[in-house]
Length: 449
Image (tube, rainbow, N blue to C red; front, side, top):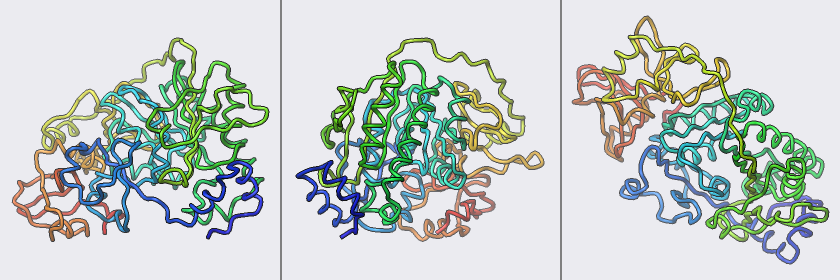
């Protein structure tokens, strides 16, 4: 049994009343694990044909499965970006409302990327995601996950939230705020969350969350939505934060969540002094009620109808002939309108989203580096554009060649000479340079088994 702080136990007894023993008992059970299918890489029907990992579906998330066992991160499906391992309750916030296919969405506190990648799967080819993380080390992890999943029209930024709201003022149809919190909902999963808990930290987190919500509102278009979430149970960080925001922003209202999320969660709690009569629209995910850890979520809607921010056109830098010649030699097709240059590297990014120079950590899909008129392709280029490669090396699941490739070894092939996408079950694992029947491994060293 987890040794809970005395003050925390007293707070939770007041919050849950007669249900508290059920909550405490749930903490002795093992954490629930799940993964989502990356539908930007493989459709759910196609994945189901090859699925050897689980047949236990997460009911409230359209493309997710519960699973047991270890080492799923070393499975070829993970390397190929077909799946993303994510705690199931953490999937609920992105399921709270129906996301438009052509929306521009900001994930303001994005690392490690679970909610970002989940949101991107809901956007169509014209939808654009900006995923922000202020801590550089976590930003690198976020970028790595976006690259592994081969996501297009995704920009990663590394800024504090006031800077994000300045650069992208009144830009987004939706802002996801998965706010840093005291982590009470993760006690069963993360021992450090228990050790670091204090009432003082709860109050500090609540103050920071209110500041972050202000920045989220500034980045939102009129008529847009904020999904506010935490992985904690405290009133201060949840209902009280939402209520205070709504009092400061009469242009916002709280809305009911989707039925699929409502079915697995409990109502928000009306507290003494609460001004928002609809605070029950907020939702709480409890580990003794549903399969997963703790989560809070609320959908906040800007009621104002108005014009969106008018942005002056930012001139896009044109890629040189060596880039287009490389692409013509490697790909069967690509959208030339999406091709531009950012920070000296050719990238694919929809012209519907202009990014100022120096504001993005990673911008769209990086084609590669230009070295003396030679293009050295980036791993992200293979992962996102592999489906369009002229040359493909398909490796059988559980084959010696597949194991050798993931270990960074050279493999034999009958593929024509040139850059090739290496695939498993039709999904790209990475790339290789084929020379006279030998595929020279281009899988990044940091990702190899």
